Length: 295
Ligand code: GYE
Image (cartoon, rainbow, N blue to C red; front, side, top):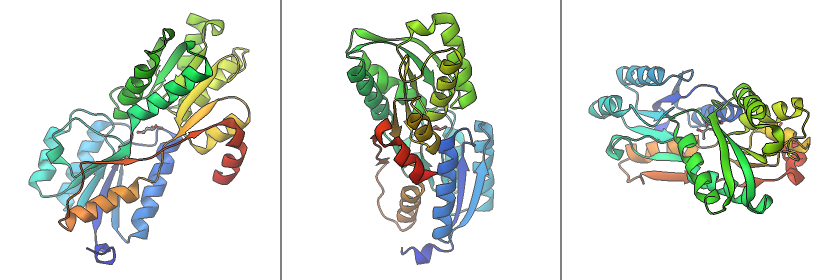
């Protein structure tokens, strides 16, 4: 079916909330993509609560939308409402994060390879520290696909280096405030001199950790290395200021792939169950240029 024939498509987008800089960029890019396609686009901000996402899905079912795009906050608790959408004949496309339901209940899962993201940061850290580093980890939200898989990917790599271990790990709930508070507690309980590096599951928590390290009288990125994922605009300023070491890009432009999959499904075409979006590692050397380009 051509895109022009899709102009009358009514699509419901169930977003997690606005917990991070990346989330805001992803929301804005997805809304722009829907507008460019002429969709009747309905947006639901779940404000970080799964029950709000489930309510939004049920509301879109009642409204009889042509398709639902869902960024699931957590991986569990979806079977019942996905079966309701299935019975109503309304296709669901997962974007950004995945979930643990029967794949027959959704068209496809669009997103980055979170396990590889964790592994890439682990590899960077192993090279940077020559395989010897006591690491503290700032996890994303508990139960989130991205946090589960980034943690696993990172652990899979560093377990190959006897001199590398995670000495503390706690969720900072994706936010700068959360990252700062958890880092402050690590600095207090472990001592900054005993921490080699921070592995933050996203840039917002990395920025918070850098602030905590500075307030403790230490130089972030030098006394304590900091690595994270997302490549949000603000992390490039922090890197250019010499306060974090690397970030891994997570594309916010996943809406187009999700909408393409929905349109293909509605046109009766086969859609793969998994559509992976790429990412890349950024270093301080290009941070000022990247910041100027994005701000
Ligand atoms: O890294 C974080 C957001 O689901 C991969 O969610 C996404 C993560 C992203 O809150 O900033």
